[in-house]
Amino acid sequence: MRFPIFQAIYKKEMIDLLRDRRTLISMVVVPLLVFPLLFRVAIALSSRIEEQSEAEARTLGIAARVSTPSLREALAKTGYPVFERPDLSSAVEKKSVAAAVEEIPGNPPTVQIYVDSSNPTSGAAADRVRLMLDVLKEQRIRESLRDSGVPLNVLTPFTVKRTNVAGARKMAGSVWGSMLGYLLLLLMFTGGMYPVIDMTAGEKERKTLEAFLASPATRQEIVVGKTLAAMTAIFLTAMLTLGSMVYWLKNTRLSSRSEELKHMMDTIPLDAGTIAMIAAILIPVSIFAASLMFTIALFARSFKEGQSYLTPLVLLVIFPALMGGLPGFGLTPALCLIPIFNASMMVRSVLLGDASMLNFGVTLAANLVYAGIAAVIATRMFERENVLFRT
Image (cartoon, rainbow, N blue to C red; front, side, top):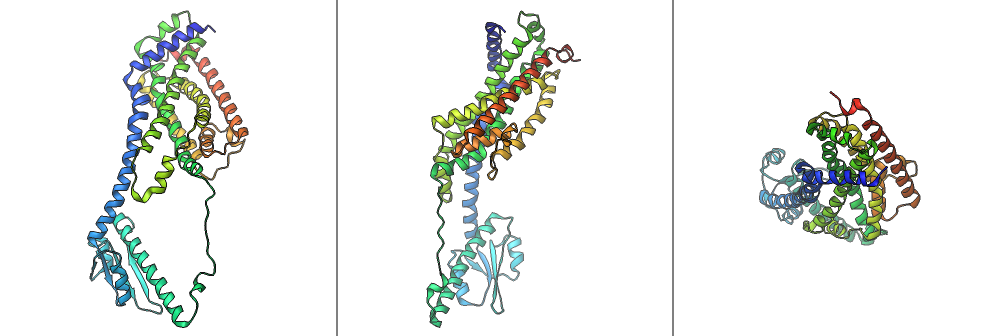
């Protein structure tokens, strides 16, 4: 294999990629702007909905049918206006009040809260009402014990204190690891789809594939040059996604109720060693993805047909990538042999700071083997005339 030949092919493909608008959008614009912006908008909307629900609940107020003065006092302490309604359930359902409370006589009496769980406003009001009623219940119990001469510490024979031994970095790694591996792998495949289609089916549509085949370059050199260009696009998409997610999440203002989440977002567990390990995990995956998509796209006769061939592959990536980021899975050498899943799981382990070097080595070796097999298959397919000139 002649290095100057496939270097020239690689350079030509990279220039073509930079000239193609669709490729730039999928490889640069989506990771840097679109996806982080959507994520930021989702967080902002969530905080806004939370604040609006609380404000709307205070405006609508609650309906009550209670006879005990202390219960009415507890409802007044919620800060919501209290109204009388003939049909409490219907009032909540029609959204004329946020929630409703009814005292049902008995021994002991039952306090029933009517809530529309599909409505965030009603849920916020019901939570507030329940909190005030719990305070009233505890107060009554303490008064009864005091009147009976029973010491109040009978309510708390012992205390339970929960101590989190995970540091800030590990907690942040848990949050980031559950989503970052999935997002990186998904955008790697979506970002690499258009470059791969352009250098296979796109070449057929432009009638430039024949010029490649008539050049002094061998089929293997052509495949290597094109695959390296596709791998570069895929890996660059992953790194741009990583960088943009870090920037946007650090500069996104969260609601006041999410201070703990904000602290974990600010404590980004990305030092030089962690980034190097993530890059080492993603490089073989990039080669594997480029070779696999290259092989599939070779069968397409047009750009549109190439999209229809590769879209199912992108959808297939979602499940193992998502499962790899879920907590509860213990990564073992056997699980490290599952492609895509092993990369997602290993990214999560690296961010948590508990990555086993054995699992890391098995994951790296397995993905390198898969990448090599996919590259060999891509070369074999490129050597078949019935694949290149499908009609």
